[in-house]
Length: 589
Image 1 (tube, rainbow, N blue to C red):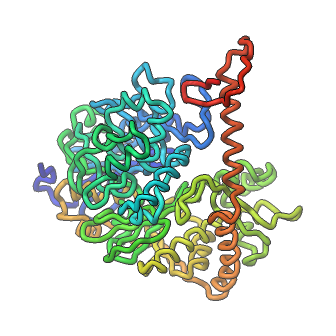
Image 2 (image 1 turned 135 degrees about the vertical axis):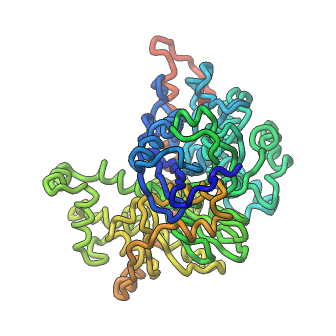
């Protein structure tokens, strides 16, 4: 079905919907030139569920991060109509809609796509909810997957830099099986939220090639073997065939067409094209017109994802993956990332900045971030005497270890909040430098460095990144890069353009600001980067396991607390020499 009909291109519009960590954003885009005409934002009512389960108050263990799937539907009901109203267009002229999601975000559903947490019998079971990308509690399962794959010499392991992340489909699925087998047995589909929301829009379940390749270990037309899965856990043998495997759609294709129900939610015409799902980072490359080899796009928000096309296949240590056609057809798509960036700055301003700073920022009419940036920008490089590791949410690339944690070295009684803030900015820049070096050393050189996402507005941060990497940095002229990228895919799905390259050439955002490395700054940051590397390898490559030991102690203490909460206060304690074990339904001795 081609819904573009015969209207001129400047009278046809598409909708891009970007599902982030805390909100969903919709943008209305004109297909003739990519002009963004209106937008709408909807904050998830339940945000990130990391402390206790909604409606029950049940405490969650450490490293859990859940979401409520109906919040995603509410984005369609609110952000999309708001964007159309803001644009002032006739919704009848919308020809397609596309969505992108943070990944790997997983939804367990019944055969008809109903999330298990929406069934009354599972409403109080944490494993029945969405597992957000930053759910890192499956690290033990990821460790076993990696160890077994290395022992067996699995051919797919080098495609992921030698390590599978706890954030991905198989580790989270194995955790679900082992911690709540009843929910696992009731689950018919284990699918990415990127695919679930498309299913909600068009009534058709199609797995997208992007998440299947990067997060679902789908390489060269196949998943890991049943023999491998059985070796992990006998009950995991049929995970792919019974829970995961499904039709895989090519990026930019139509997964289906808008249903009457979804048309009622969004106010859009039923029957318009719904594009195959995608990941927020990967759809941004076309929005930045970065569809050729060597153009590294960093999408910087709560976390940072780095994506780049290459014309050769190389095995890059610690990468999130390399997938044939993972970004555009005909090229190898590389992905790397940092699990915490904006999240780290947000954590610090919330928990590490004294009230007088908040008051001073308020009096100046700026945010605390802006106030700290202003103070930090007055410093010489190295003046604060600090070096930090940006691992407050673990390390995605190049160590792929979410048991790691943040470090700030060099603090004294004279250290001020702006010192730490700048050190954290620099730490994330050094994390990106580590990724750039890994690409270069593996024969996949970075020729351009392009930044998209909400953090590009911080000019100090952008200059630090240029100086720390030694690369000229350009930003895209859109604050809605992922939503614009999704809109570009919608235009292809609607038949307006023949492929992503053609649509990107017509609809990509204009370039934004450019930051050129300052030679003396590059030299100064090189010295600091060497110190970062020393700490990076000392804590991250096995020289000192203190972070892992601390995480184990934290987990044991949290489980003890949960066990105590699950025991009735009036029950007599039972003597036992057996170690306590914890399940999601409660704790037993």
